Amino acid sequence: MGRINSEELRDLLKVYFIMGSTNTAKNPEEVLKEAINGGITLFQFREKGEGALKGDEKYALARQLQKICRASSIPFIVNDDLELAMEIDADGLHIGQEDEPAERVREKIGDKILGVSIHTIDEAEAAIRAGADYFGLGPIFPTNTKTDTTPVQGTSLIQVFRKRGITVPIVGIGGITAQNAGTVMKAGADGVSVITAISQAISVTDAARELRKNV
Ligand code: 3NM
Image (cartoon, rainbow, N blue to C red; front, side):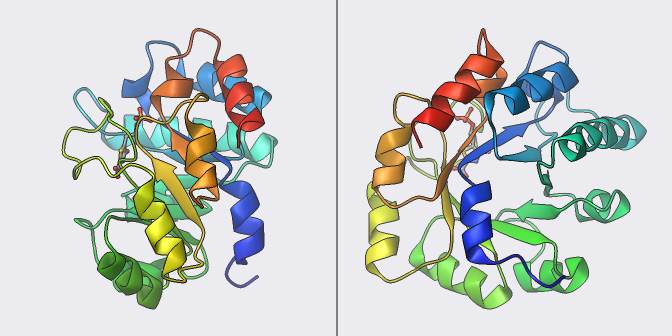
């Protein structure tokens, strides 16, 4: 199979929905199905925060959500849990700067998709050397979902990356909605990663559809 090529990945990153059980008051499986109906292109299982599931319960939810993704050919990425990603044969893993070093993760996951959260050019260059397939860059706008973020970056950092000649696929993250997604794309992102704008929407399907229209 080999590593995914950048062009295929750019298409997958357009509307990258991230969710764990703590991000919705509804049934996560139903939310994911509705989001897929609305047109999300990629999914990340991120089971974090107060009240997050652990152990067998976490694995069971991961398998359920993976099954839903598979039925619609949406790749399934696991956040920050290499063991889980390998155990269920996820399509990829997303890691932050505080997780296991990307080189080591790349060795362990083989050709699976590897996403790395980065905030500076130095981090980006190190992640490229380590074998990252795409970058998550944020927080672009203020967010209530993650409290330990670096300062809000706005869209200008994406432009800086592109001007420096960094061609790795990039998704913006943090406070992104259907209303501001267009500005993130215009700055040079290949897609947008969103939690709240989809997971807590009154109509999940409509929210995903609106985002898809605007990227
Ligand atoms: N990472 P929402 S911001 C998971 O800046 C995450 O790296 C961020 O959630 C980063 O779409 C963030 O609800 C939260 O704002 C994104």
